[in-house]
Image (cartoon, rainbow, N blue to C red; front, top):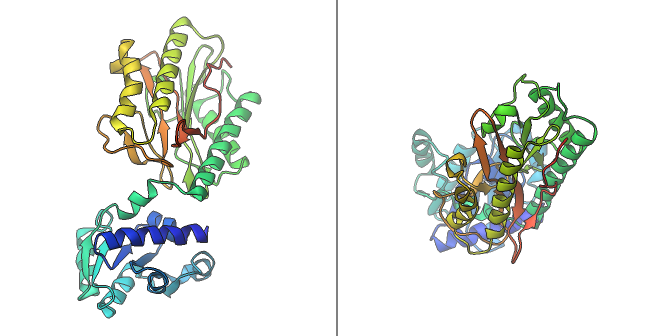
Amino acid sequence: MSESHAHRRDALRSRLRERDLDAMLVTDLLNIRYLTGFTGSNAALVVHAADDPGGESRTVFCTDGRYLTQAEEQVGDLERVIDRASDLTIAQRLGEEAAVYRRVGFESQHVTVDNRDVLDDAAGKSELVRAPGTVEQLRLIKDAAEIEALRMACAAADRALTELIEHGGLRPGRTELEVARDLEARMLDNGAAGPSFETIVAAGAHSAVPHHRPTDAVLAAGDFVKMDFGALVDGYHSDMTRTVVLGKAADWQREIYELVRASQSAGRAAVKIDAEVRDVDTAARDVIADAGYGEQFLHGLGHGVGLEIHEAPTLSQRGDGRIAERMAVTVEPGVYLAGQGGVRIEDTLVVRPGTPELLTLTTKELVEV
């Protein structure tokens, strides 16, 4: 995705010029990956704000000797420096060329107070200016390469769940842990590099715990089984939740399931360009509250997904901001009846004009296994 990375650096330069910054010192590894494609565990990057070609020629990447070959392959379009103390080395470079790097933004949300002092000393006459969230704001809007990675991650998770059900992986007598491991293995078989996060499998009364960790609890006939899981592809995370019933559903299970399904549909419909994130949450939450279960909807409606499983925007009453085209978000309402059982239904989708693009395609009809 080297062309995509170059475009992202161009977008960052535009933001830097708007803030009267000469450059940005990037030390967060996920932001470095976003801007360069580098996937190692030690790196720093300075992106100069000048229009190309000046901006690229003064943009410098640093990592240590373990990643010499990897850096050549992944960051071959930038000047590369090899040194173990990557952030300090880049800061010293700023100080040596202070006339070019007069005011340099840095990721104050990721840099400790002590390390700020060290970087300040190394940068000399280059002024380090707090610029929290500068790269993350760019990451809110996904480009075509990112959306394709998310689409592949969602497809791997969809296929894994389909295979799990078709091959009898959801049945009485298995444990939550066995189902979770089976689901994760099937995601790997379908192209995932790994799970997006620790897979949640919650059966029976455990399904009323929003983030239950799977145990040796045995699945039984009549249980709700809630599965919250995702696949990791090219560094991008999918996220979905489906809740099924082992055997024939009881009336109370159908009632709760259909309520959550209606709420989830309302939430998806509210994901429109320029909508307030709080209003999207409200659209789904009101469906559940009007049915008398508002106190049993225990969390926000959703969140952004991308290089992190939880990233901006936050779809909740505490969230801030508006929905924009090409954001990738989840919609995941739930109702949790303590000691009895619960339902959550979650999709990953991409904001488009009109109707959002749904990336998780497994049915949301109530499945009786």
